[in-house]
Length: 129
Image 1 (tube, rainbow, N blue to C red):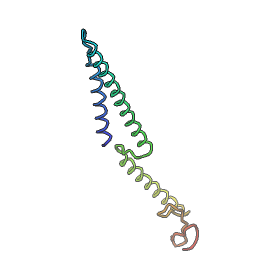
Image 2 (image 1 turned 90 degrees about the vertical axis):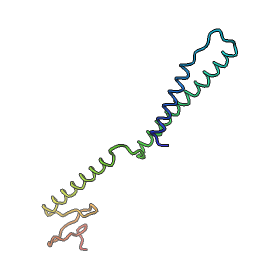
Image 3 (image 1 turned 90 degrees about the horizontal axis):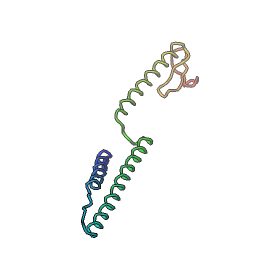
């Protein structure tokens, strides 16, 4: 079950249990058996309310773990990553142009520095190919 559906279900259950507890009105003048049944019903609803709250806490813990360990797909993540990759590529191109302009060398496609020989050919790590 997706976390959004689970959150909706857990919240609905929590509200339903709370409403059941609030709606319970002890009847005046009822006999001892009716009072015992009412007390038991309150116990059951209280236990269910606690269980629903624990389910919501469990869901928040799972979401936090997913977020921390990168499993959670947040809105806009792919756009941010794409922009970061484009910016990094532009920076690498700029550095390569600056190094080529200075004659110090260039950077190959793996990001390693290369020196240029007299013909403008790249020599990896200063060695002939």
